[in-house]
Length: 318
Image (cartoon, rainbow, N blue to C red; front, top):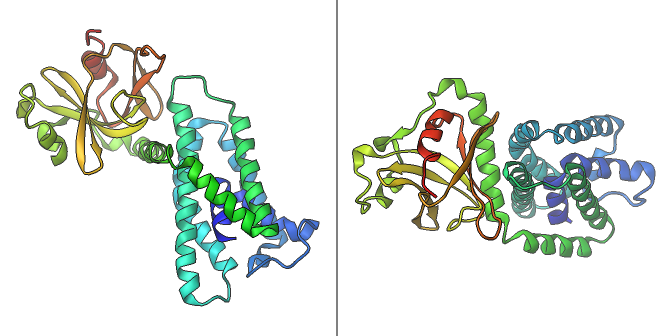
């Protein structure tokens, strides 16, 4: 029962708790809940969890608010997964409780990161996103299905959890990177007044970035400047990648980590269509390729100003 409950908590924590709390009360579950999960069956918990469920439903209608909410829940979801495991494994030996709690926290964090990363990609991307309401309903159905199966048919629930993990295994790294970058954008939004908006000088760039450009004759050390960015659908990089845009004599280049090495993508051939300044980021949009794929760069608010980005990107030849 542990993996499906932890994944459900990562996808929709308050709906999961609401279902577990209400199941014995409304007759959805006749048998005693396993472990100490029955402790959740109280009017106070029902009211509190129901209130947070409604609040989350309202917050996620607005992407900036959802970004802050999900960044904050990157701590709450794994902790809640651990607490659910402690309730479920109540009375079990420490050798079972400790690894079970760690597994539950990791699964809850993974599910929350993938789910929130998908929301970030839909928000940051310039293509028409699906209805937020439909996406929320689909997530609720998955969470409710996992909890219901966990209570009624644990083996089926475990199989469903494994199938779900296999399904998201391929896009998961990009989605987790998108969520991490968006969380950093949210933190940067809070502390933006403490940072000057500018490019970073060569000596301020990470060592691995400077090392990747050592053989670039168009990048003399003193002329380098860069900024940390996220990229969406950049040809030659993962679907969502985090790295640095480095401006050199020959034009800007994107540098990112790839396993144990670094990789570079030349941005000079791309044609800039617009530069958008939002509440949490500045976005550079490029022309779609032959397949209609749109490419974007996302700069934090502590990075270069919109005017500086226009000077660097709007005059790149097609």
